[in-house]
Image (cartoon, rainbow, N blue to C red; front, side):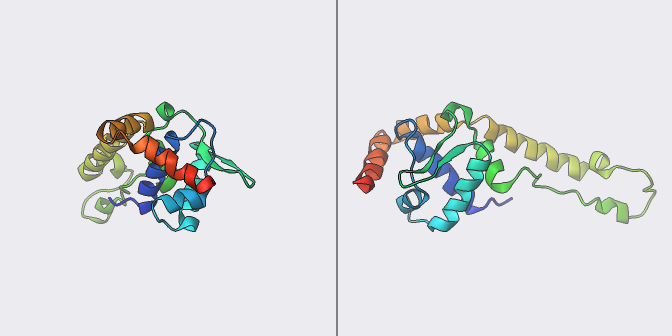
Length: 161
C-alpha cells in the first residue's frame, strides 16, 4: 500500500504545530515554506485535517491553522484517515465468484482466506497507527532532537516580524 505524500506533509505540519504557543495559528503558506512544499497542495491537506477536527482554521490576516485538539488526543490514524479517507486499503472484488464451483449466496469477504488475511493485516496496521499519538511522536522527536521545538518556534517567529 502506498499513502500519498500528503500524509507525510500533514503529520510533519501537525508536529510543528505542537511546538507553538497554544492557540497560535500559522498560515498554510508559512507551514509549506518550512519544508519548501507547494502551499496550495499543503493547504488542501490542512483543510482535510480541519474538516476532520484535527486542526482549526482561523480566517483573517492573523489567521491560519492550529491544533483543534490536544496532541494526546490526535492519533496518526486520525491524520491518515483525514488525508486518505476511511476506506479499506484492500478491496475484495470476490474474484472467487468467477471461478468454478457453487457461488449462490456465498459472501466471499467472509469466506475467502485471501480477503481475511488482508483484512487482518490492515487491522493490525490501523491499530498500530491508532496507538500512536501526535504527543508520543513529539516526545520521541524531542528525545532525539532536543533543539527541534525551539528551532521550530524561532523559525515561525522570524517570519512574523
